[in-house]
Amino acid sequence: MNPSQRLDTQELCPDCGGQRLHDLGALPGNAWFAGVHHRTPQPPGRLLACVDCGLRFRWPRADGSVYLALYTEVAVSTWADELRPDFELVVEQVRRRVPAGASLLDLGCHTGGLLSLLQQEYACFGVEPNPSARAIALTRGVRQAWEVLEAVPAEQRFDAILCCDVIEHVPSPARLLAQLMDRLSPGGLLIFSTGDADSWLARACGPRWWYCFYSEHISFVSSHWLQGMTARQGLALLDLRRFRHAPVGAGLRMKRGAMALGYAVAPGLVGGALAAVGSRAFVEWPVGDGVAKDHLCAVLTRAQPVARIQE
Image (cartoon, rainbow, N blue to C red; front, side, top):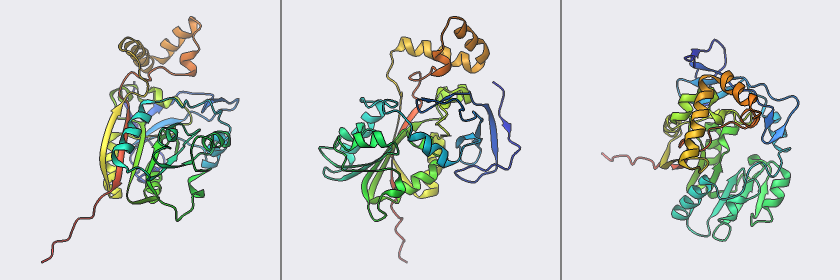
């Protein structure tokens, strides 16, 4: 792939406001948004990287109200509720670090799949913009579910906030995490999962990394970004796990990896070959999920203030 080029634009990093941006290349076009096929899809745009904080993001982006409206159209079946690798990690962290009876808020709870694993031990609450999914969540042990974070009563605090596969959907992940930290009780935990743009597969594929194919994904964080963000916000990183988003066997990982890397290097050649044999699946749903540990699960809390030395 071509090396990244310095972007000649007035665009600023949505996280840190940095001006040193690199253009990593064109993102693939995709008529799908969160499982819904649109006749007039969002323009694919380009993948930019901030030199200062490490955030990668889609440019240009639509207005936030456009995305919110699209999420209300999402089919309930778009995101599966079975036990996913990130759900397993989050449940493990909650049970190890949060006392029974504590309150949990799941941002983007969908139909309550994650909270259903914890509702017998904790007081569970959710935020979910899709009305159909929100209604189902309320039948699965979720005590209350709000449409957006801003609708949660300002005075209400939670002992832990969960955020699985959400921050890649917002323009500024750092701003969202700061808002969530403000909703925590003293000593509370923020546990989130998302893609890791520092993984070898993401670096090798650039804008053709499978996680970039989904037009609803507009921000891509990394281990490097996480370290800088926690330092700037005065947070402590208690745990960081890397994992495969999809559990697949070694043979299938090799096959998917070869296709993903081949598409990254020669998209026209690989795409044309697949089209010739009648395969549309790769064009609609990209290959690469499960090839590498290209996701992370992090546990954050407020850093303890340093005691002043009395002279």
